[in-house]
Image 1 (tube, rainbow, N blue to C red):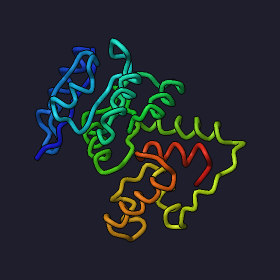
Image 2: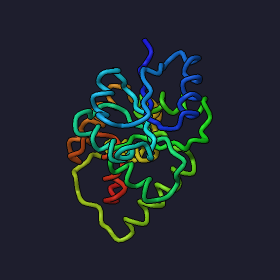
Image 3: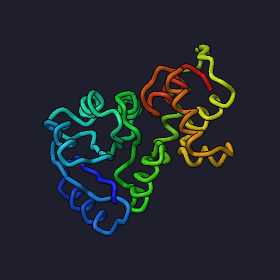
Image 4: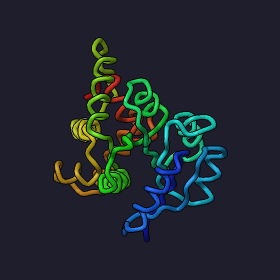
Length: 212
């Protein structure tokens, strides 16, 4: 069964381009397309999407505010920001709001599909230039902080470090030579100890507090 994706973008050309791209995909399908984010949570529930592609400038409240609304009720929906903006403030605000990835609109159809699949596997897809900015932003914010003790085991610290590097669950399993289920169990323990509810929150906390 194909994974359902919904798109929020007020640019008609972008919407048509994405719709055309999804017609040829075997693993994901475009369940719905919206030109605004009014009643964003209701729209996602109605179309049954597991992945949301969100434009930052979509009216009426903008994509970052929409992400915050989604996260209040839909903790497990994957949200990927899709935008032309590369400025630090928007990137930082999007991630802190709960976005799982950040792609630029010059991303190719193949890269977008791969990014969606990567997110479904537990990764945090980002355009290369954005990933560099994210690391720089958090590094600058953490230069003078000391890491608190969350009593993470050496294995949990290792896995958390891999998460901050953008590795998916499967990739972590391969690198650590452990099963997928064991990886999930370790990550669940990491979430509990850090008192976070998502991979994005865990990565932000790990970098922000210099845990790894």
